[in-house]
Image 1 (cartoon, rainbow, N blue to C red):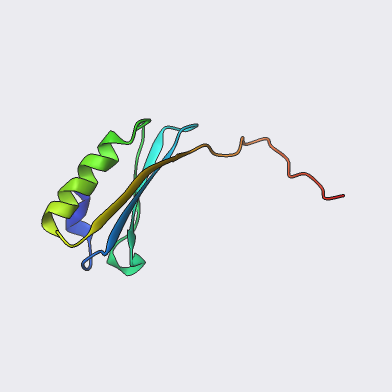
Image 2: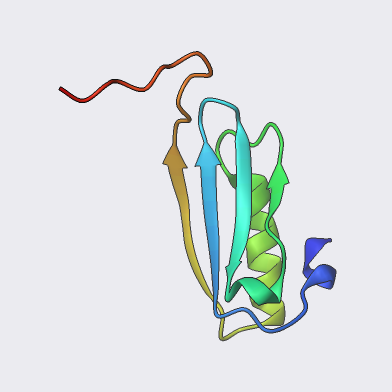
Length: 83
């Protein structure tokens, strides 16, 4: 479990899900508490949510924010020039 890698007590846990790739990311505030980690094939964020709830059980003062859903920019998308 990723909770064993934490180096401190997190204040907040953030979950974001990239709908285009199916990857969910769990990150922490302050960032010094631990490195973000990802789950592949987690289109609905349930794996990340399960891990976040396990961490909150260990650190009850921590708050959960998310899951927030977004889509990544396509790989071949070109930035538009400003007029």
